[in-house]
Length: 384
Ligand SMILES: Cc1ncc(COP(=O)(O)O)c(C=O)c1O
Image 1 (tube, rainbow, N blue to C red):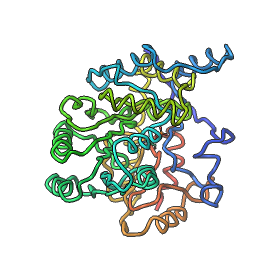
Image 2 (cartoon, rainbow, N blue to C red):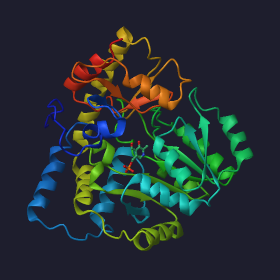
Image 3 (tube, helix red, strand yellow):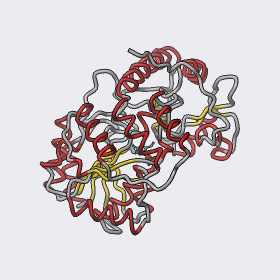
């Protein structure tokens, strides 16, 4: 079996990397160790790179059709093998990015002024996307676990149009159990709430973690529903512009595709993005398994550092993703204050401070770094 290399540190400077090249632009300070953008610093699987190189050598990058058996079959095969769900290939549609899909489905499943419930803390793009599309975002606090009775009462009181589930949950790293999913399905049915499940982080899991795609519950849902995802996070191919949605209802799907192809004039998939998705999902599962093992190792290192030197970290509990969550004691600080606090932290000698998403929970792509960088970077960065 091929043993993949996750140790070689790749210099990402000079690649227009949002994370590494634009620190000064984004934070007004240079030389910070950035943990803000959620992409990994590992190179994608060699097999994916080879497919892209081969296609590039042909030199043809013309308009490309997404509705084909290779693309849909690769996604269906992945859900079958990885998540044990048989999905109807007709339900699959291409979309350029997961958050683009979210924006379009919000337009479809709700009206301006409608309420959208999501668990809080939540991925910051959820906030921007819901509110800038003139929907009211209601954040249901799950910092201390989900109080299901309270959620039931919340749905009854607020009459939301949509429930936006982050599955697994970013930033808390919660893998929803089958029981949790069942409760969510029942609540959505009982209060006629459409559901969108963002499953982009489902590929990277801690050893032994079981995940549950909403696709397994489609038959039980009597409301509008969709899964939105891509190979982007698990295989580090986010900038290739290819994601997908599972929309089981034919009318909802037709409306989505009409919106994509006519209103948004996006009928062609980026060729390399589609090839990468096919390759990741068809042939690169072993690479992903080894990546998960490696990240488990990073997590263990991080945990031991935190025990010894991190007075200000209160808990870690991610069951998946390579995102690290650092819970500050002074959780009441506002987002801007906490950002400033983090930027002032001592960090390795080659950086002046570090960046992280601001808020009561600070998180970033902590485990998505090569071992050397994790030890050198985070080790220094986490010194008290
Ligand atoms: C939960 C979640 N959904 C979606 C995205 C972004 O996906 P895309 O770049 O395909 O819009 C991220 C990126 O961090 C994320 O954490």
